[in-house]
Image (cartoon, rainbow, N blue to C red; front, side, top):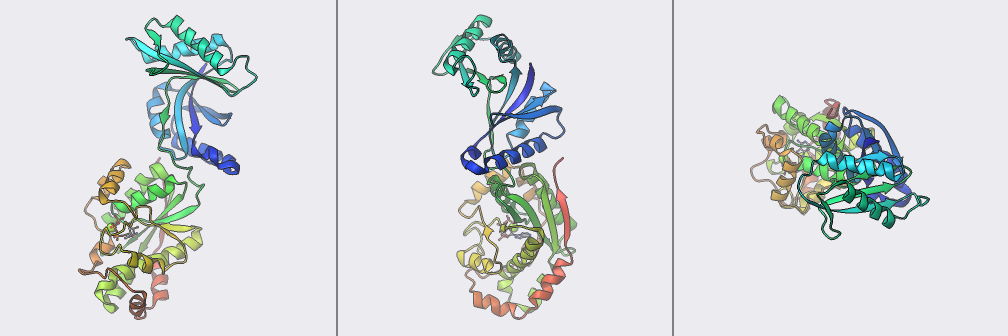
Length: 390
Ligand code: ATP
Ligand code: MG
């Protein structure tokens, strides 16, 4: 008998020919999430993953970590035993004793037989398991409608018994949805946007634009800490930093003030596109929500889109600020985001920004600038890190 963490894969079961790749990816992510715990071997048994847990006092933390991995359906602590009823009984007794139930408890036995060569069918196994529980525990009684305790026995290649399942945050395994570069400001929205895309299996890189020394070292550090907090969910984040001060200075000097935000956003997209080409990202993610601020209108979005040929995903587009804040709190980025260190945009934000920009007005402003040279100069300030939570 030994204790294992069982892992069931969810939605990916529907994905036909991609299934093998998805499972492989999920295994990698789960093992990454459990790095540092006292775990032993892992193996697949009829498309469920089992990971040996050598120190059972770590189970609470192990469950906490593994339920945050995208692409899983549920996880459960279980005992693996011999494929015979003597061993099954021992395992069930151990599982229930481990729980220290002292009052009366209703229960129901559930059985799955993935190994069709096993001598009994699942109904017969469940009935036998029910009998075992009654024989060993006076305080247990059967309730098939609303049982308090679920006693599961799975006959697969090997045999497993367990009482509880923990549902996970869902989604698809990271890496199965391509790679996208998140434009990470220091605000509340962009980390949530990155999380939402990662939930659909997209591997996330992050790019932060700063205006050091006009903006502080703390502002840079804040964005890095946001990426680090995100990486708990999204895995390793390739992190890019670019100094935009030369661009803001040129815009300030040459262009009409009310176009500053939209012009700088288009520069961000051009720079991000150069990096996407070099570091193989398939698209971008931003934290815009329609109508949230004056610059987040369909017209602005359209003018920003025009600056790049790659798609820009905006997973928060229809969300209310209150919903975004709730999510930011849930992934623990909120407290970092509300720290007062500002990024470059807030410093250079015009008092009355254009809300319905027209492309030809923007192009007229850009004609006053040497775009390629400004982009090249900004790219020279590139710094790259890999950010990961140990
Ligand atoms: P956030 O809360 O993410 O800062 P916001 O509501 O403040 O968003 P804007 O300032 O209009 O909105 O920025 C829209 C999006 O542009 C951000 O969500 C982000 O994806 C991107 N962005 C803005 N500033 C920066 C920056 N300094 N570095 C990287 N990306 C940025
Ligand atoms: Mg912002």
